Image (cartoon, rainbow, N blue to C red):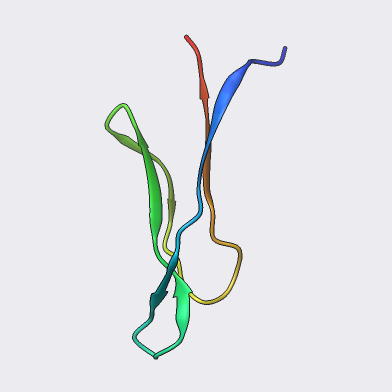
Length: 56
């Protein structure tokens, strides 16, 4: 059974890293006081925080 929900996406902007390169800033999504998704950011990889909120 598929559940309907709302997708929340956060795409972090660029920040200057300690090595001088630009990289993605860290991002997180908190739901009901608990971290649901966390990305540490950085230079390599796809950085995206995405979470689907389901209705109760």
